[in-house]
Image 1 (cartoon, helix red, strand yellow):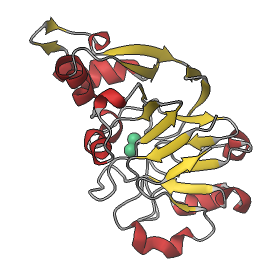
Image 2 (cartoon, rainbow, N blue to C red; image 1 turned 90 degrees about the horizontal axis):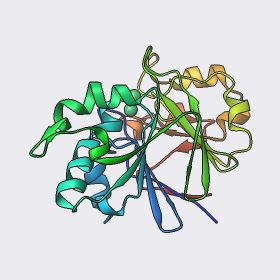
Image 3 (spheres, helix red, strand yellow; image 1 turned 45 degrees about the horizontal axis):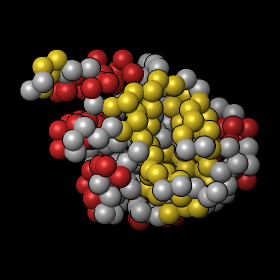
Image 4 (tube, rainbow, N blue to C red; image 1 turned 90 degrees about the vertical axis):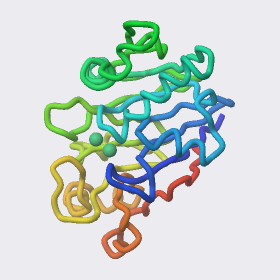
Length: 244
Ligand SMILES: [Zn+2]
Ligand SMILES: [Zn+2]
């Protein structure tokens, strides 16, 4: 049964034009949202998709363009949509950062009094894999912001999504024969402490691998950087759909 991948956003954390890099996975009439940044509600609304159309959310790491939308999804599912429950898959190491250090300040107290994360979502803590709708997603740690746990995900033989990451050691071995490879990219300059530059990918990965890589999480000037993207499979357009 095929899986449909649709990037509801493809931009970096500063992007106005392409929204946050968040991925919608649709399978057997259900939707899994991978990351939920501050543009997620608007990006889904543009596609005619509401909060109650989302069955589950997976969080790769704690940065605003990946988690700030959860405040809306949590409050609105509970109070506007009559206690609608979204499954929230979170890596164990990410959860304390997500609730205690990020969302609790806003969501930890409401008109019902003190809250915990489970008052808003069906929280499922995961380690190196999780199961959703008959699909087994594999997780892998990514080098992103030093000291902050962050993860990419794979559906073996179908796709790899790095979320935010610098170049990944042994990436070629990791992605095996996956049909689609979506890789974080910093195209605008020559150095970035948290995101893989195009040159760093050229230095670390083989030409065969570059040919399979589709770039995501880019800046608003991506269209003017075409000369830098030679040798890659290209850059993912916002809203583009991949079947795998
Ligand atoms: Zn990001
Ligand atoms: Zn990030």
